Image 1 (tube, helix red, strand yellow):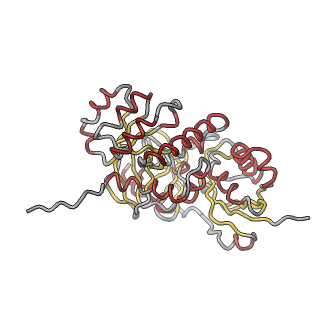
Image 2: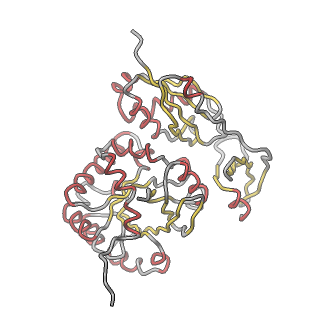
Image 3: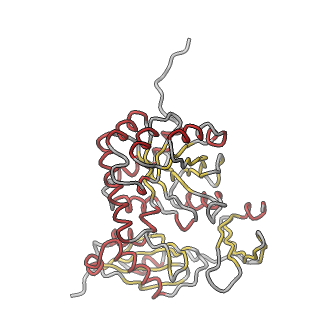
Length: 214
Length: 153
């Protein structure tokens, strides 16, 4: 079971190179990381997967962007969440693996219909640690509330969750133990956190039934 | 009556940061109060008892160490400079934590390098880590590379 940091932003998007982030991730207990815009190698015992983020205003644009060669090469494809109709449609797109930035959407933006579809298609929802670490006051309260809502939908409909540090710097990375503590703030159990940390491995290598070929 | 206490050893990042104990305390208190509120933090009674060599020891009441450790994870700046506190260990005594402290010293040969029209001071650490700090007086930009990255660029 690979423990994966589902999203990091290496240099030039951040101030730390992917190799440096990989060294820190190894020290913090991770087996692999998903680097946005970079990846495809192994550094210091940590496997680096390539991620691509699609930030689009409409589903049509998402369908166009998933055909981009850079997105096709990616191991994990993320789409930034939007309003309710956008989310319901995007989780049905075959090439989309993870819906992210859910904390920045309105309360009803990810509802039971999107949750059921995500559960059926195996599309994950990303829980980012960055807003919990960096925000304060009512903004952080809203983030924790959203994550608690997502967690209750996940328990009901069974779609996967991923956990990411969303780090642009080594200073934004947190250890597996610290992530467990932060996730406990909105009610996630230790088992659920472990499950979420290993979701990326299952997304990249999904289990398929054994097929006999004659 | 004196209550039972626990001590949390935390590593301060970036390693080269010269930190004042009071600044670390203010950062910890701000993070803990923002997360758990005045009442909970008042009961936990956190305090920074030791701050040296890239490490800080935070004291708290027994039973509250998990919450304080979570609060340490939400510290993102010390004295307005970007920083992080990484919990290393928790113990009932400072003596036991001192044995867990592994001093982090830059390797010899700190030099200067020009990178994208800006001059940086280079700090090299074990495990191929290289920190680049922009030359200047205040709010210098930092970049975190490895030896291989520095050679490439």
